[in-house]
Image (cartoon, rainbow, N blue to C red; front, side, top):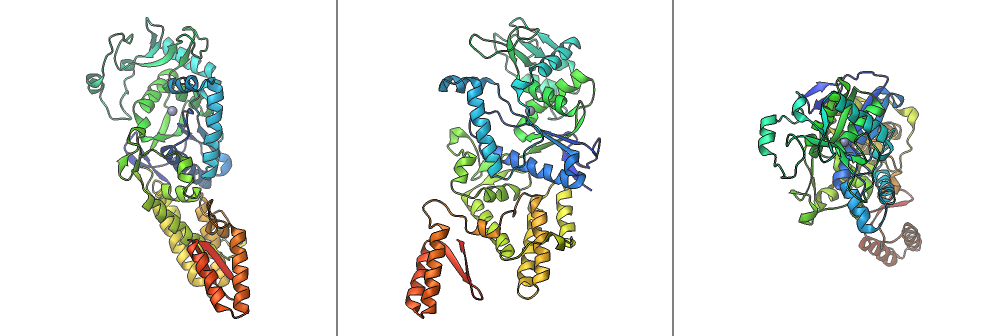
Amino acid sequence: MLEIYNSLTRKSQPFSPLDAKNVRLYVCGMTVYDYCHIGHARVLVVFDVIYRYLTHIYGADHVTYIRNITDIDDKIIARANERGLNITELTEEFITAMNEDARALGVLSPNQEPRATAHMPQIIEMIQALVNKEYAYQAENGDVYYAVAKFEAYGQLSGRQLEDLRAGARVAVDEAKRDPLDFVLWKSAKPDEPHWDSPWGKGRPGWHIECSAMSTHCLGNHFDIHGGGMDLKFPHHENEIAQSCGATGEAFANVWMHNGFVQIDNEKMAKSLGNFFTIREVLERYDPEVLRYFILSSHYRGPLNYSNVHLDNSKNALTTLYTALRGIEIDESLLAPSEYSSRFFAAMDNDFATSEAQAILFELAHEINKLKIDQAMMAARYATELKSLAKLLGLLQRDAEDFLQAGQSGELSADEIEQKIAQRNQARADKDFALSDRIRKELQDAGVVLEDGAGSTSWRRE
Ligand SMILES: [Zn+2]
């Protein structure tokens, strides 16, 4: 039985969906004003695996996964102005880029990717409900704020007390809020800013209200899982709870899931520290599947420490796994789950322990390598099992040769390598061993490893 660590109750609990025919998951997605970095890669991959595993348990037609797109906010307006674009031109460019990155990482599309600018009626409706119930008020400057003190459970998710929060809050002199903890639901438009009409005048929504309005619109008032990065727990998710529960009078998400931070060489990743990588920059040097494997090699709730050594280790790990699959015909009809599957599922059921699940893939690869020698049928059976389990992690779905022979620009192409192998085979047939050794050395220097088998030579990149 699946157990999930719930940030709200601070413990692991058996997962029991409100409706097993429609398991509902909402994840806070990107604010699209720049390329995605590896922190975004982690959110994408972690929740992709959670989504895959939920569909494995409940069936593909019985899980609804929503990941929103924030396509209006201060950073978007500022960046569009800098570049002389309107906000739609800017956000379309980075939504396309985000989708390319996600596809490269093997991330499945969510069922819907709602955009804030396409949900203004729902956002305004929710703010109106909050105003009607006196959870919200319009201040003198025209902005609409949420009155935090009115919501009794405020601070429950992040474990904070109102008094402590208030002591730490700084009050600006021109502040129009009644309480320094109050947060904005609707910002009245400054001159030349994109804006929408509302009962409180022209303006645009605050960030927190978007997620409450879109999750409710797509999944209903009360749903199963709400996820996002740990940095969103406070104030974003705390505010979402206050808004949604305040507006609907019902419970909101039952389970809150948060993935940990990405560190670079044990330091916090920050543009100001110069150790900030976009997904694109990493993919210039590593195969996307290597990045995906690396992300899943740590438990999603802990920190993920990015370093070249760890990426190289992940590449070696995938090389080992694909080498075991190499040359074996996968045959779905042979699939017979063994104790490896039971242990794999036990790891995943334990709050998605993906690194333990990866370790079981290694045991399977080891078994396959032993059986390959003289029990082809059994080897094929386990290879089929390996591939089917790895699919739940979004790994090992390519042809083994495709991974092992994938090259980077500047390296010998696969055609050039095949030609050299043919020349070497000819030299060996001619008993010109000096030439065949020279070609082998030449390929070795170019990072190509040859493996001579019975009657044929296979190769892979180092
Ligand atoms: Zn959100």
